[in-house]
Amino acid sequence: MRLLLVNTPIDIQDILGRFSQIYDDLKMIPTGISLLAAFVRQAGVDVRILDQYAENLPMDGIISRVRDFNPDLIGYSATTPNYCAAIHLARELRKRFPAIRTVMGGQHPSIFPEETLKNDALDFVIRDEGEEPLLALCRRIESGSTDYSGIRGLSYKTAAGVVHNEKVAPVDVNALPFPAYDLLPMRLYSSPSYTKFASPCFQMIASRGCPFHCTYCINAELNIAAKYRKRNVESVASEMELLVDKFGAKQIQFWDPIFPLGHDHAMQFCDEITRRGLHKKIVWNSTTRAEALKEQTVEAMAKAGCRGLGFGIESGVQELLESVKKRTDFDRVRKICRAARKSGMVVAGAFILGFPGETREMSEQTIAFAKSLDIHYAQFSLMVPYPGTPLYRELKEKGEIGEVEERDFVRFNQNIGLTEKPPIFVPRGRTAAELKALQKRAYTRFYLRPKMVWMHLPHLNAARMAGIARSFFAVSGLAAPRAGAEI
Image (cartoon, rainbow, N blue to C red; front, top):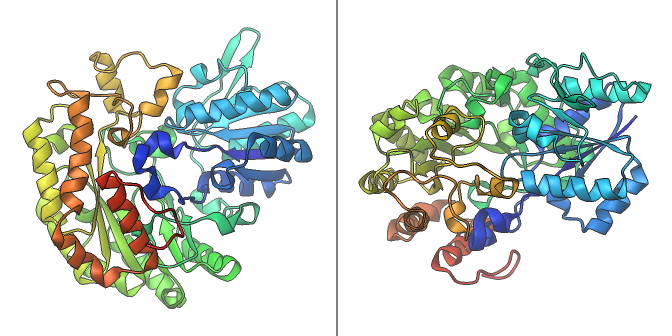
């Protein structure tokens, strides 16, 4: 049984418009696909990965790769923003290899399995977590059977229509193998300059799901993946050691929605990597909730090699946060941001503009709050009601989101204000043009301040200087030097 897993590309120009020059060299490990590959390989499946996002092969190169391997099954992964790109690639390969069966998984097909299977390029959809359904599907295909009943989490076509089998049970994250890093082009992976402190820098996942209930967040609502499960710290540390010993990693970027989760979890993790001496070999950074940490937590993380922390702060207006079930203590956020800076960390905050009910004054309040925190980086996203979230269902029922066609899915993009496309959602009383201008203005007002120079001086290196320069050129509308060029 031969399986080819494809990491389909995202068109950075579609996602960031002229701001794409900031991330033109950004390629990160497809952790989900590499875990799937490791899981089925340990059961005897001959599996390969085509990371089209990282390798950027022309169609002739993709076709050659498929022809050489001659898989029995091709698997694609899709989120909502890259769904169109994934479907396009699946259609092109189906034209050339009509006998190869195809399956798609990921957030988008999990939410829209019926609609996804309307595409002639696809035979199956795996909903939610894919390890066990994918292995079961491989075994069924290998046996020559066309009876797919009983494969939990699988949707498939029959003469009578689409069949949706019962949901798959949550996987035990501590029973999973490490990702199949050896199947990936590891030399190609990097990280955004503002989160990069050493090279090579690789991404890891130490948990699944999210224990919180923010109504706008796909991580808190994607079916069984919403059930929060964290790996034990011994397993996480062992995977870090693998990346250090086998691939020369100098930095790990934890790609979890929240890691670590709270003081006790952070202290256990820091104790483990310090006990192993990993803090002397590698640095790391992560995203978590500021309110879940204490000042001593941050100090311990810094001593254990943490060089950067990102916080999902979202808004400076308590009323808006409460309306989407985001519990935030602004005083606590200020204290933890201050403690992280004092510990020598680079601090980033994520903010959202354009919540339902948000007025112009509230938007300005969020921008002012971001500036007041004295953090090194701020990301200003436009509010996107992602399919599968309670907020999407609420706005859909109210008629504030119209019918969405396939070509519109790329508009489910938090950086839409930086492109030429209109936002998928505009709050009542606001306009699309105003929101797009607001997102650009937020970046300008935050970054083009003299204070930014002094905050960044202690953390500057060549990669960060190049990233800051590209960011400046993007914000100012000028052409940026390409990666590798002299600044």
